[in-house]
Image (cartoon, rainbow, N blue to C red; front, side, top):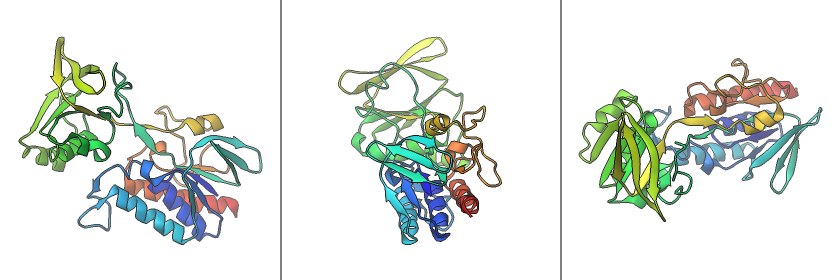
Length: 296
């Protein structure tokens, strides 16, 4: 078995496969998963005080390795179906497996405006828990509209001097517990109906240009955190020729996580659904069991 992706779905699937007696390899880094970068998880079962995503990821990997799972921090560039087995090519190596589980997760959507790509890692970030500390006592903007934006604001409010929300929506669509906590912040301001037109700066971010209605406005900030939702990482699945849903996710049978190709299973964020760590674990377990049954 080879599992592509080292998030909760992939590692759980690997654990089931290894416990089922199969030689199991996970390709990917736990530190690149959305769970690892997600900060404090208060709704993952079994941790009354919450658990940080990075610790949760490390614990799941350690548990999987206890049952014999191997983990190589390599990025798969191509998967080829050779009939009786699959060949997975990375930058420096290639692997073969009789069955594979795809669990590459999803990545942050970009805004798609001038300055965003040029200033990424120079003030533009997609991970508050990775880069938030760089903006202590500075002004920052969060661009987004959902739970991700709310969590980013709450985290940054303890670090930055001022946190501005620039939301393309007319309101923040987040869980009530987050909305309630936002009310107590004294260094937070929100602008709704904001259409971002440019992220400004030469060497580093200096400001954001946006429109509210037909009125152009600008905001001077030192950092911009993008929380515009997620897009599934389906490039490998498309190259393999798997069926994709109209929403852009890998099409699976929810009963067993089978894809349109025998021997290929998929689990986690790249199959759509709720996109929660808890559901990823459940789908990973189902994919692992189904892969074991497929291999006999």
